[in-house]
View 1 (cartoon, rainbow, N blue to C red):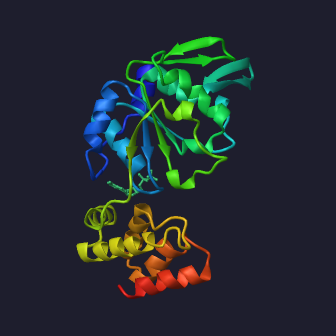
View 2 (cartoon, rainbow, N blue to C red):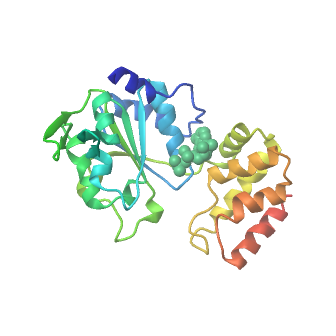
Length: 268
Ligand code: ADP
């Protein structure tokens, strides 16, 4: 039972991941001592893809949880459910990961309330246990279990941040949008468009990132560049593809849209 559950979370084939620095080596060393890892960086820069790649490389199951502010500790740990025969306990994703020895990836963990985040504490120190208080069980984490969280430093505010007592349980890797040559390589691979076009998209993104803090909260992400490439690969005109995938999602401000559209028009 537990083996088939484990198999269900294995990554079946090699995900494409273009390493940018020494993150693969660092992560492998961290995993070998089961150090909890925090991936810091803006949205759409490759954090999720990196975890998928590492889980595949290490041949470990991966359980991903997208965190949000309505999430409770029970959503992570588990709860009693009512069914025809009475009550039945159902493990949450964190408990499943601890039992089967998965890498548990908590995406955008800062979105979760602090009282939710603290449930990971006993799993992230030498105890490596997860108390299921409602059930009266103490789960000892499987030796392969590891916890990984992602964190977007740009979104943090005084109201929303991880406590120091949470932060200081993790080793951290900085992620950012790769430099244009590498980003173009990623866009071309992911969308199937040619190098020339991919280069142009990467340069447009570069220009948008210079507007961060000057009217834009974030520049264009690698994810959006891949979307633009995919539209072009489907025969959409490059300007229209860029408007739909790069500009419209990013901002509602008419002046900023004009600025970005004008930048795109200089390339196509
Ligand atoms: P994040 O988790 O940081 O929000 P993702 O990992 O989902 O972002 O990345 C968004 C998309 O960008 C991926 O689906 C992939 O197509 C592409 N991508 C970004 N960086 C890389 C990379 N280094 N190697 C391969 N693909 C990447």
